[in-house]
Length: 368
Image (cartoon, rainbow, N blue to C red):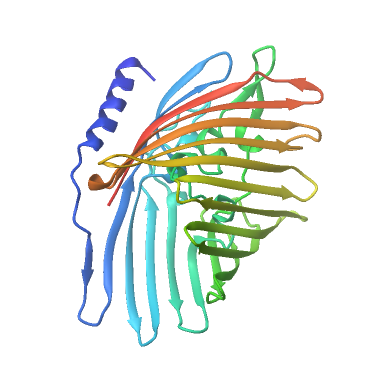
C-alpha cells in the first residue's frame, strides 16, 4: 500500500471518530412487532511483517466485519417469530490478504451473506431456527468479557490468516497462519437448529446443515453446544463447550471439541481461557488477561494481553505460539470503538525452521 493510500486510510478512520450518534432505526407496528435496520462499518489498517518484508493494507476487520442487516420481530401470543437478514458489505477482509494476494477493495459475492433465517421462540419449548446462520457451536470458542473482542477475540486465523510464514532462508513456505492458528470455532451454514429454554442458566443448542454458498463444498455439518452464563455476587461469568463434526463428501470426518470461559471481576480485571482439539490432528489453548478502566468520559478503555499455544497443526510435532497486546477505547456517544492490537507469531516443525512474524492492527468500528 502506498504512502498516499496509507494517509487516506488513516483519514477514513479519523473521520469515523467524528460521526455523531444516530437514533435507533427501529420501527414498531400496532400489533407489538418491530422492524430494525442495523449494521456497522469496521475499517482498519493491517501491517504484517513476515521477517523479510512488511505489507501494509487497508482492510475490513474480519473479526467484526462491515455489515448491514434487517431484523423483523413479531409476537404471536407467548411466542415470538423473528426474521433476520444480515450481509457483509463486500469490502476486502483482513484474512483475504497475503504476500501473493491483494484482493479488490470491493468485491461482494454470496459468501458475504451471514444470515437469512427464520426463528420461532416459544415460552416453554425452546427456539427453533431454519435458514442461513450460525451453527450451534459458532462462538463457543470465543466467550470473552475483556471488552477487546472487536479485534482480539480467540480467532487469529481471521485477522491475518492468509499470510505465509517464511522459511529460515527467507522463502515463502506455503504454511499459512490460518492452518497453524485456529480456534476450531464453527461458522455459518444453511441449517436447522434447536436451542432449549434456559435451565439454571444452562442452554443446549444443536444444529445440522450444509454449505450452500460454495459450489465446491458438499460436506455435511452437525454440532452441539452447552452454554452457561451467570453472575456470582459481582463476578460475571460466561462460558461454553461444544462438539462439531464435518462429514466429508469424499469420505471420513473432521471432529472438533472446544470451549471457552471468561470471568469479569468488579475491579475491572478479567480472565479468559479457551482450548480445543481436533481428533487425530492438532490442539491448542489460549489464556487472556484483561482490564477495563473508566478513565475518560467518552467511554471505557479496555486492555488485554494473551498467549496462544498450539501443537501438531499442519504436521505432527509442530508448535505454534502467539503473544498479543491490545487496547480498545470506547466512544459511547458515537457508538464507536477505536483499537490497536500488536501480535507476534512463531511456528516450528521438527524438520524445518521458520522466521517469526508480527502484525499491527489499527482500526475502528462504528455501529448503528
